[in-house]
Structure formats: C-alpha cells, structure tokens
Image (cartoon, rainbow over all chains, first blue to last red; front, top):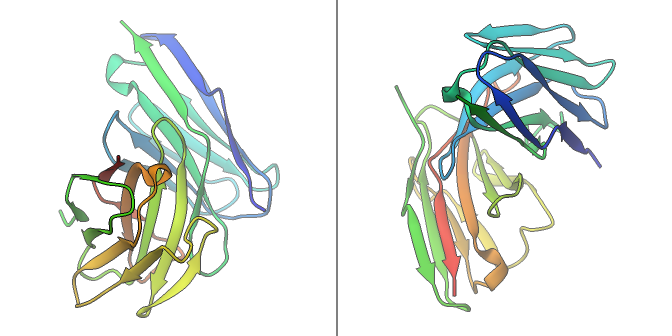
Length: 112
Length: 115
C-alpha cells in the first residue's frame, strides 16, 4: 500500500527565512503533485512533477522530485506572510486510474 | 478560466438521511474523482470515474455510496444513509484526457455535517 508522509507537520517561520518541506513516498511513482490549501478552502495546484530530477519554480516556491529516493521537496525562499497555508503533496499511484494518494500535509505559518 | 464547481457549499443532514452532492467538472475533462477530508486531516480518495463507470474505489466507498454522471455535465455523489462519521469536506476533481501529464483540478468542496 502506497504511503505518503510529509515533514514537518507544522512549521512556524519568520518572514524572510528559508525552509524546506519534505515528502516521502513508499512505492515507485514517476508523478508527484503539490497543492496548497487555505483554511476552509479547496486545493490549489502548485506544481506537477513528472519525472526524476524535475524541478519547478514559481515565485518563492521551488519543488523538486527524486524518484530514486522517493522524495520530493518544496523549498520556500524568503517566506512572506501570504505563504501561510497547508501544503500537500500527492502521488499518483500509477494504477491507470490516476488516483492521488495525499500526504499528511504541512501547516505553514509565516510570522511577520 | 474553467473551473470545477460544487453544490451545495454546506449541507446539514440528520443521521440516516440520504444526501446528494453535486459537481460540474471542467467541460472537456474525462476523469472524475471524489475525495473527502475530515476536519484537520489529510485528503482521502473515495472513487474515480472514467468512461461512464467506476474505475476504482477505496475501502471508504462502501455500499452506502454511489456516483452517477446523469448527463454530460453533472457528476454526483450519493450517500444513502448518512452516519456521523460521514461528516467531512467532500471534494470533486476532474482531469483532462492527457492524464499522464495533466493534474487534477479540485472544486471548492461541500461541507457535509451529519447530526
């Protein structure tokens, strides 16, 4: 059974600081997705990583995928308050139905 | 920009009652999903739907659950006899035909409260 774990679960950081969120998964998959969720809201797609070594950047966020290590990272550069949200990674189980198995989520709070 | 829509945004029901949650996926999408999220927890897969039939379902999706695509636009999730533990946010998602390179787009969710 595919398991997806994120760490940390909670992250409180000062504005201007850098930090990395980690997403580990237990079985082979070539596709990984990052979503952002604001409280009480839906899931907003941030990044789609489709191959080993894929790196995507948008603003202060950069995501990467290492399929051999079964690890994805979401790096935050010079955090700002607007980045406060919960971040989920999701792995496509490559079963043909393209269902996503979500990680536990990382609740990020950026302090002014 | 096309988006997935869901109605209602909030549904309150009594235990044992039937509820139908409605979704309108993005119009040219071919893959449809329901997920749920219990408050403060992670998002869990319920069911996937493709080519007018269920392609996969989770253990959560028992006989009390059903899905339909009654016409070319709506995608519904029915819970026949709700339980307290069905209280959660239910998200509909859809994905285009180039599934290998696309991502799932999520609707705003329906918050279901079972009393």
